[in-house]
Amino acid sequence: MSKARIKQLIKDRASQDGLMETGIKGVRLFRATQAIPCVPAVYEPSVVAIVSGTKEAVLDGQRYVYDDSQYLCCPMSMPVKAGTPSASVDHPLYGVFITLDQRVMAELTLEMENIRGVLPMVKSDLRAQGIRLAQWDAGFTDALLRLLQLGANQTDTEILGESRLREIYYAILQGEAGIFAQQAFGAGNQIARSIAHVSSHLDKSISIDDMATRAGMSRAVFHRKFKKVTTMAPIQFVKSMRLNNAAMKIASGMTVNEAALDVGYVSPSQFSREFKRMYGQSPRQWGDAQRFPAVVAQ
Image 1 (tube, rainbow, N blue to C red):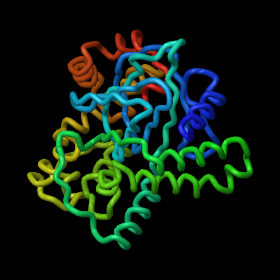
Image 2: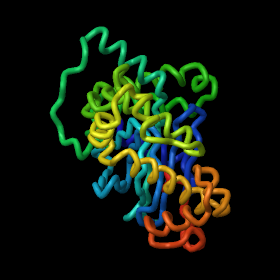
Image 3: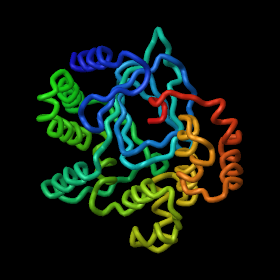
């Protein structure tokens, strides 16, 4: 019943395709009524919950298709491909994006570790570390309903928004993706901090040695641990982040040269070569062919 109420709340407010603000920082509703194949995108630390239809994300060849039985948890910035392969007017996609505030998630993780002790070592599939699907459980469902109910009243939203958001963060940390998320936001995760630095400095020169130094590791150890967490080598990750960001900017109307500069390319010819090698089209051809709704780029 709670999930049905969540679906109705989103349907009532998302009256057109794309993203819609809720008045709560980092919480946006979305609707899609057309099938769109997976295109380059960058997932910032976030949770994506679908209440109607299916959504798809691809990370380094690993495909994630999810609906109202699972939500997607991405605790670190990741270069992916994302789309709405089955959305239509008759079967629209409805859902909610929740940005994960790194400070609040880290605080909650630290509090939980102080109470429960340090997280146990978990043996898992290291090829699936960047993104995780988690079952909707009662805690997540109830917290999401309470969060979205605030949108009906501005006073409630402004006064209770942060506390309700903290409640859903806690539900995520308590849920099926909890240990996965805690490992990303815990005080000892140097890889997550390195990724956050890369994500916010794409327009600057980024060397693997610098990334390793920031993580307090040798280059060889950093390379090995980084690949376990992200499925990609550091150089491949940085390039994918830059090119995916550029593809999104071009598809949204930015010129090719502006997009290249924005993501740290000094040489337009190098940018064009690497872009075409990754996507099979020149940046200009890509911009002419791809005009996707903002919802796909999340």
